[in-house]
Image (cartoon, rainbow, N blue to C red; front, side, top):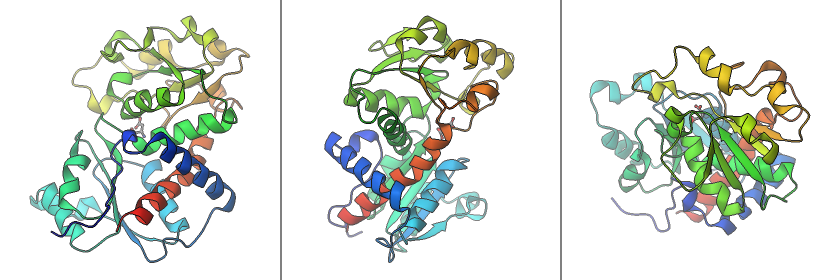
Length: 300
Ligand code: ASP
């Protein structure tokens, strides 16, 4: 297979330098204002989701269409994977149709990276197992920067919930400290990663007075080999973000979605102006537009 010059993939947050991330954010600012352009009008993007997705898949599709690109969403229910074809062969066949980028999600950690040798267009990782979700981490950081008008160096963030099994946490744990954020990991022992690099706490109430941002996570039950709680409600009794815990503190509240209401975050906190979950979704489109543009302009 002829290798295209300069093909760049986006597999983890580390694939972009700090300056490149700033450049992506500057482009996202423009896309948040202007919404559409036709810069990618002759490009075709394939999305390949082997795991459920509402936000990420539609966000990529809207981002691509706002840039004028055409999008083919592969319907995995009718694809050849159900006929026994290997994922490597599926991807090589798709690549042979000359798409300009492949956006993919799979439950296997590391798979998007291993597939880069079967393609000559950029692969963009839309989530691989518990490994990485780089576009989510970039939109989270962008939303934090936007909220604090760029003044984020030294700010503290508590990441709360199933950190051990979350690819969103995994990407953010690597990305946010690069921009000067201090992390506090808040979880029960069963959801706490091994990592000893960061401060840890078992209850948000122990650290809430010292944080500027709280990022709540969904419990990743699809990745648990045993059940740790009798029910999600029981987990929520200890880890749900409520008005009682937040009080009137000036703290930004984030969540990557999907939110389990009254388990991850209470109804009243979801409706609170400090909660920027929907702003994250809006910013997600602008960030993905910027990432698509960056990768497709430099690859080829
Ligand atoms: N949507 C995010 C992900 O794909 C978070 C989650 O599912 O809890 O990882």
